[in-house]
Structures are given as structure tokens and as C-alpha cells.
Image 1 (cartoon, rainbow over the protein chains, first blue to last red):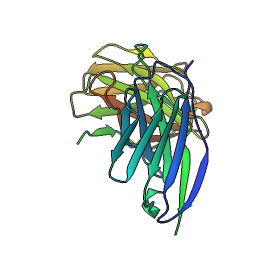
Image 2: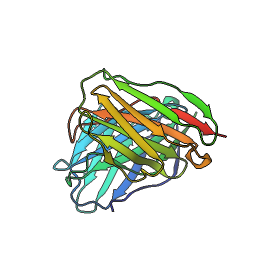
Image 3: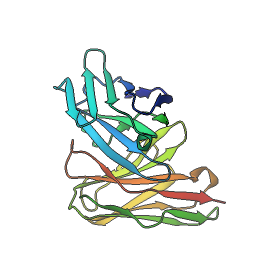
Image 4: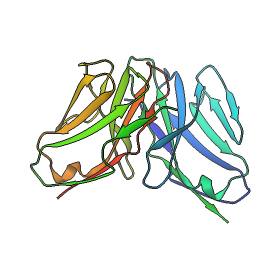
Length: 112
Length: 112
């Protein structure tokens, strides 16, 4: 079945850029998503990209998609302590399955 | 803003009890989903529904059932709770296929 992989942990200093990476196996992926989860909370949709795009920018967030390598990244510019959270990559294929396949999440720690 | 409301943030039940988790969305979304989240495993799909009275099994449906009698409400039922069902349960909804999913705050369920 489909698989989505992420590194488990990333630590950066406040003000630096953070780059969270994700790889996926489903070549039929149509949409790829980034969600943020703060402690004790549900998932908050950050941004998403359609598979025919290679980049999307939204304020401090930049999503890069390399469809050939099935690699997705989320760049957070000027990272703040409030960005500390778990970030999930998720993909949806075009197989008729309406649910998302999630990675196991990357914990971002921002040090002051 | 989309609002997905889960009836309880924390719930403690005993082994063998029948447990109901409720989820309501206020945006007339077609699709609703139940996931469980466990450390290191990301989110795994239990069941989803794409219309009233319609349901489809996800990746881990064993020990669970669902009910969707009204479009805005999707219930997850643990027929006879077991300790391995202790987890965080997340409900989500989306307007149509391929549209972003919006999540509730989650229910942390402990089975003693």
C-alpha cells in the first residue's frame, strides 16, 4: 500500500529557517498536505499542493514538490517558538480512496 | 471557518464497556472520517463515510463500528472496549473528495 515517511525530529534556533522533508510512494498522488499538531490538540491544516505544481508559497511557508523523486518539503521562514509542534505530511491518491495517508510526523523544536 | 466538534476531550472507560465517540461538523461536508493516533504510528484510518448511512472500512476497522444517521454527525462505536483501544481518536470532515480534511481537537480515550 501507500507509504509516507518523515524524519522524526528537527531542532532549530529561533529566527532560522526550518525545512521538514517527506517522501511518499504513491505515484498517483493528487494532493499533498501539511498539517500542524500542537500538544493536546487536533490537526490544523497548514497548506496543500496539487501534484501538477512544484512550489507553493503562503506567507512564511514554502512547499516544494519534486514529483519525479516523490519528495515534498515544507520550509518555515523566520521560525518562531510558536512553531514548535509536530508536522504531518499526508497524501491522497486518485484510487478512489477518499482518506489521507499520513506520515508518522516530525517534531519541530525551536530553541530561543 | 470549518468547525469539527468532538463530544469529549478525555474519556475513561472500563474493559468490555460499549463506548460511543461523537463528532459533529457544521459545514455540510459530504465526507467524514475517524482516525486513531498512536505514538510513532501517525494517524491510521478506522472508518469513513461519504454520505448519510454510507460507510467504508479503513485500514484498522476491527473492534469498531460507525453510524451516520445525519449528514453532520458521525459516531464511532467500540462494541466491547479493550485496553489496546486506548488511544487518541481524531474525527475529520471534507467537503468533497480531494478537498482538504478539517480535524476536531481529538478525544483521548483510556480503557482500564
